[in-house]
Length: 117
Image (cartoon, rainbow, N blue to C red; front, side):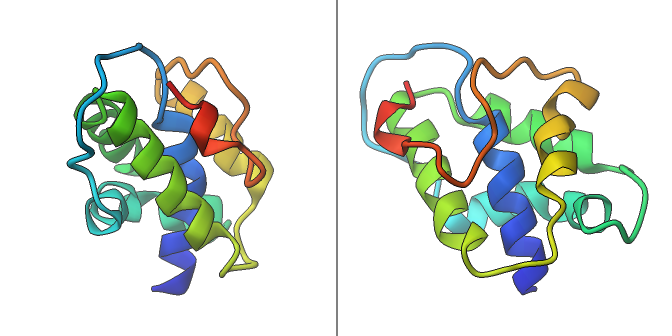
């Protein structure tokens, strides 16, 4: 489960920001992020194919429409990323592109979530 959370965090950072939306209260929690990105874990830990990962990435991207939602996802991913060591960060960073999701920032554990719009 720990590997799933770290993987999800990194992938979610990729799916956080694409469009600027009006500010409102975040509705996406870590449990939601983990649910969307769980299918990515085997791929970003080099234990399986991409599989249904893109469905989760696209679903999370569609769900995170407001700035608070995207920042919440980012914060969740950051908190989970520091916990697990078996995630291939380069592979995780490439997932959005492989899934056809255009993210205008680098996927990295050092992303400043307060700057995510």
